[in-house]
Image 1 (cartoon, one colour):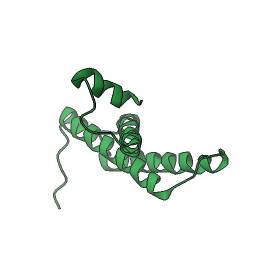
Image 2 (cartoon, rainbow, N blue to C red):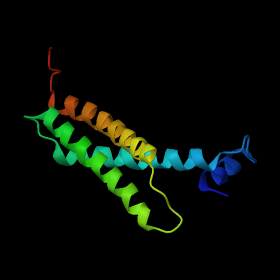
Image 3 (cartoon, rainbow, N blue to C red):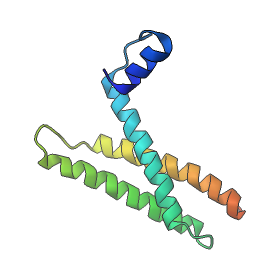
Image 4 (cartoon, rainbow, N blue to C red):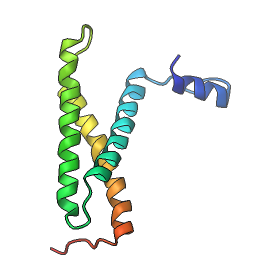
Length: 114
């Protein structure tokens, strides 16, 4: 039984519906990479160049996701998937969006008018 299933069982006494393992695993990846996105933007952030900081953070996160999948080729029983790279990169992007919103307010950065 996975941690999420145990939590639901503790809270509600039994599982209301079975939680697909695939959903749990992908959700965990999104959350992990969301945290990575927050940390990357916090590390790269420059008040003078917020857009460039955001691009660097996104590139670093996407490259890390790709390298994480690539290393799985060499682990018996694991496979690499470009879809997983996309899911992980989406998590990074979500984290960057959360962090950027907070940093923009903190430093009172105005949106660029086009």
